Amino acid sequence: MKLILVDIPNFEPEINFEIEKKILEIGKPDSFILRFWQNNPCVVLGKFQEEEFEVNLKYTKRNNIPIFKRFTGGGTVYHDRGNLNITFCKEKDDILFSKYILEEAKGITEIILKGIKDLNKHCEVRERNSIFLGGKKILGSAVAQKNNKFFFHSSLLINSNLKELQKVIKWVEEYPRDIRTTVKSKRSEVTNLSSSISIPINRVKEKILKNFLQSLKIEENNVKKIYNNDFTKI
Image (cartoon, rainbow, N blue to C red; front, side, top):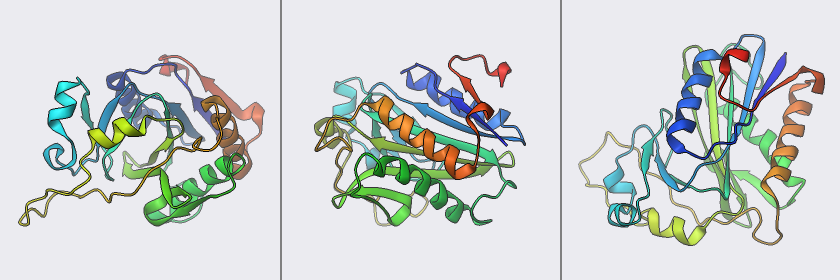
């Protein structure tokens, strides 16, 4: 197997979410795709969520913070350049840990955990395939199976603006009692991976990539790197 590493230096959310869709379309049977990416400030909702119940719309409108909805489930998150988004895509039938989607996702989360534990040994995986540090959440994830692909992505707080995050997201649920078709976010206290020591994002990428290669038993000469939008080269 080969690993295709996608690390395009772009911070525009519209472009980044289009790249996510392209990755889902072009995955190859003999390859895994790993992507690192960052966004300018924005709010991202899960596929089955409603923004009026999850987001402080007055604040986002006043501060021109855009809102997006991804094609996977999960809860609402805040993105800025201080957090690292991690995407992993493979053929659904290339089973790594389990034929069950949530167990497969947990295995991917554990790979990420191994990488960041090299930087802070107190990190641990808890409920909903999330990673916590000192009882506070630093990573949440979402997963989908589509186009015969297994698609996982997560958001890791490294040096994000937590004060802005608190203002953007509604922390008190305001769902009408009779609504059953939407998914409610599960709120957790959050912190940054670099809360106690400064950690460059590139250093985090290096650690996570290293552990993906080790866990998937892929040699470095079987890594193809994509640093631009020309996906025809994949």
